[in-house]
Length: 260
Ligand code: ADP
Image (cartoon, rainbow, N blue to C red; front, side):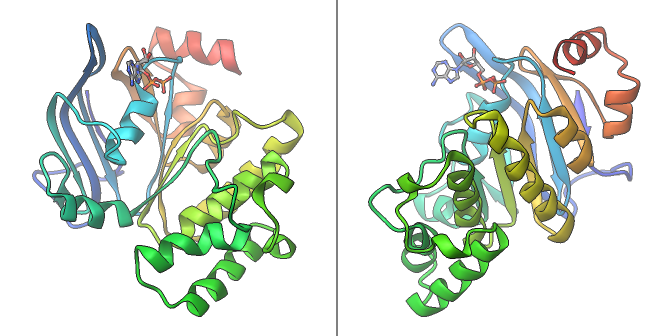
């Protein structure tokens, strides 16, 4: 199934506002075909959410986009750059366009919260330290942690650590933010705060988002397009009102029945 995240029908070929294009991507781990000829296009500024049962290949897509793993066949293009094959220099450039927030926050425990945010802008983008710090403090303000700049991440709650991870991803001014079940490692009472922050970011910035989530209300709120995965394929795609309101596929109805 080919999926376009535009409300306009695509005529052909590449268009200038196309940020991610995945074509015919197959990914196997041994005998396990995790993605099976996947086609997916994400246009600039869109918010796309991947839902579906565990093991259906959603995280693998984010990992492919982050170049953390390679497809067995098919092509992936991000911001006009083909990912496989690509030189290390080309991949470094692409990775600058992509911010990722993981389930486990993956903060550097031995650095202050502020340094966690400024490290990549300084070392990867070559931003002057004072500029990176000023921007880092703005981002900490945005995520509601202005007073935690000098703390070690381990002294923060899980929800606060995840907010720092969001700020760290945004510090690179990426074109696309990949969110991989960012609340699934959090205590239940901390989930809402992180989701509210992401809702705000989706509403107030023009960043493109690709999210894997089990939070269906969040998916409904932020998405332009929801893709339902099953066994490495998109079995149904559409705007959230339709996917949640009138799912067409039996597997989608079953899945939503179990999680809603
Ligand atoms: P989802 O995000 O939908 O839960 P994943 O993309 O994480 O699914 O995983 C899809 C399938 O790929 C699962 O069966 C998982 O066990 C398998 N898989 C993922 N990563 C690896 C890996 N590094 N080695 C072997 N199997 C993997």
